[in-house]
View 1: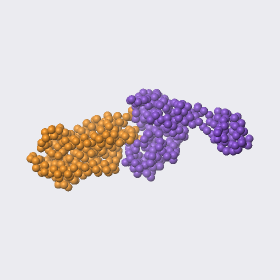
View 2: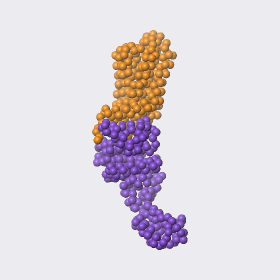
View 3: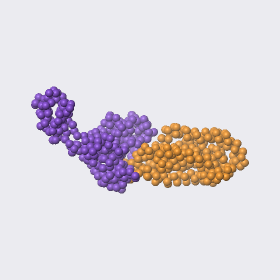
View 4: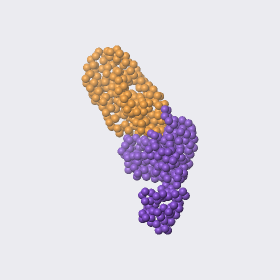
Length: 311
Length: 261
């Protein structure tokens, strides 16, 4: 993607000159608040919306010149699971298999495979109107996979799902990338989703990428982890502070704990445990705090990700 | 594993989905079919003495009136086709289809397939009701088949109009809002009286310029006249012209709705 722009009439630049590259087999997390430009980017990359300026290629094909070849290489589950409430899950898959050009003898087989994979075999002949949000999302994913695409676009796939359905979808996405080498471009407004799934993350705000890298690197860029220790005996608080001061800047908390920054990273944690043990200092709790992606977003934009939406 | 599906396969797949949708929404199937029959029953009974007007072409007013439910039913089909397509625009289902190698003409014609199925069911019901209430066919069994064929062409034509409106407006509510206007064209036609016995000049003029009159007269000719080539040519001609105009106008609208780069 190079300087990709999308401007709407009488509106702001939804996407304002994005540059990024996603490697084969990678899960790329596109993280940002509502209205940041995530879905507009996906619509352009899936050829459903022409860019105003810039260029992009998907699977080696230009999104404007070779749009049919792009569509043949990709599967997409867009923001709203656009399903027909009157049709059953099986009918959706059969329709998709026919339109994607699967030979007639293969359609039934592929439909069965996908229903089983997304756990909808029992509900296959029920109308989609009666499906739960999680079931709709799983069917949406199955539909995107009918023609075995090399690249998968998932636009906020877990928005509105319960934790169990979310975890099941994460597992399937990880499996697709790991076992089938599928490249996954995933948009999300959930920090933990990007953190848990993505090999690399691009943080988008107001149509521009404000940070990009692996989750660990992004977090490392803005600060070091810290350890918060609460002694078992309140009287040991002074001694604890002295011992931890050797590892970095430390400060006492109002809850009777001591927190120390670890400029060298979490590797120092083992040494802290050894030092506390050798000095016979018993601890009640010991917690490692990593900088979060929300901290990264805050550092890059001056706002918290939650509630930063403009839509 | 993947091959390119043919145009026929694509139309078939989209039409199957459209037809399944039409049949599963029984309220959409039943009530639009019932309304023209109620009007047929009321007018057929209350206005039966209009056949006493000099030069009225038949003594059986129901035989004259039976064409009206066919055209009225076809108008309901246009709403059904339009709202179904508008729903696909609104829900994003059209985008899902746009991500497949589906051709836009296959999508359009296939989407209208369900309307055609609906039109067929309606036409058979109206035909049976007509026969059961004493309507005979001057053109015989062959005429029944031609009437069904013309009725399907009319349903298809109105379905394309519904499809065009759906693609232009993108809203089911807007389509339903336009429906009463279609009904006006039915009442300003030769639906209740032959044009040459309409006394009010302005009404006769409007009915003469109103293409709906020729759709009705094409169907009616098979019932009360026998084989009238001119009436059939005008009936088929206007229906096909409406379908062709709507399809031509709908094609760019469909491409724009699909918004494929």
